[in-house]
Amino acid sequence: MNLKAGLWQQQTLKLTMTQELSQAIALLQYSTQELTEFLENKALENPLIQIDQVNVQPMNPLIDRNRRKHQKVEKDWIEQIAAKPFSLEEQLISQLNIKALSDDQLRVIRHLIYNLDENGYFTGDLAEIAVKLQVNQELVEACLMMIQSLEPIGIGARNLQECLLIQVEYEYPDNELAKKIISDYFVPFAEKKWKQIAKELQVTLKDIQDVFDEIQLLDPKPGAVLGSETSAYIIPDVIVEQTPEGLTVRMFDDMLPKISFNQQYYNQFKNQDQQVNRFLQDKVQDYQWIQKSIEQRRETLTRVVTKIVEKQTAFFENGPESLVPMTMKELAAELDIHESTVSRAVREKYVQTPIGTFTLKSFFTSTIQTVGGDEQTSSAQVKKAITRLVEKEDKAKPLSDQDIVEQLKITEGIIVSRRTIAKYRDQLGIPSSSKRKRFN
Image 1 (cartoon, helix red, strand yellow):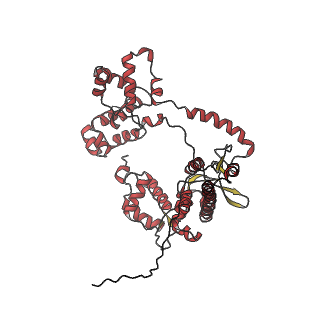
Image 2 (image 1 turned 60 degrees about the horizontal axis):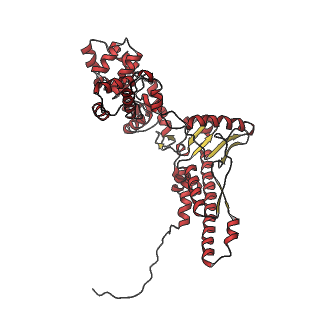
């Protein structure tokens, strides 16, 4: 093979991701909090970017001007409470008679509380704690029982079985059958192997069903109510309002810091040497690109939400049950933008509507094939149909997933697979047919 040296031309198509384009894409997908942090960091590195502090007031931007002062006062004292939550230790210790406790008891109790997880379960080892604190294990066990006597009932349990047993002994002290079942038949009871339990205890399936119904009222995560996190507010990015002219869309920018050009700094250094001038020009360009990217983000988000409102009008009039099938690809095609642009625009953003606040992503649902083949049913509508069928079913003979498939096809004209039904049922928190069966 002979290789010849030479020159030739080759035409290629290549998209270069500039820093400015990358920044515009990033700003589009930023949530309000992320964009706020970005602008604050930019102001630190670019002396020409000036953050204008604004007095942000309402958590609910739809309130009228006359009510804002009252709401601010109310929000202030509420947030003072939320800002200083009682710790889990403080909430539990406050229920004890500390004066009646010895120093060792109080020390052990505090250490035990430290070993409670977010659901209120004790996750430590009693023997190890006894050695570590140099006390006998009987004292540690007695202290754990003290914690288990506190509210919420079930706190300090070592597992779900013990948690439920503590609650049963408190809520239903005379129900010996419930105590027996949880103590000795917990796993087969949870697996609904009730016939075996009924035979061994010589009770009816109805008796076990009654125990099951009582246990359903108990709290498997008693510690969750003692969470020490401060209150979290959802700040909408867009607001949809009902006016006499119809639904209107407007951006809610009140929570974003406002940026402006620091003209004084620029005038002070603009006539310096060439290196300083080059630095200033780079920072001017940076400021201009950020302003342009913010405006582009605002415009894109407004267009996307406006199109959502246009296509989901029934949702705003009748509620979530009227959500129609709509995909990001379809919306992108109608707006003549890329699907990824829609995806970035709706990422971690919320819209406040006359019927509540929702994530923008929640307006997009997959389409389900119907008998007529027009694909006008959404996954949300299928889930609602499944819920209706389960609510109306004979609990003595609950519908299997395959039964639901057939019922949806006959009554709703919806074609779905058994696997899809199982997935939607799990998402709805609906147990399988065997676990929904009741013995009356």
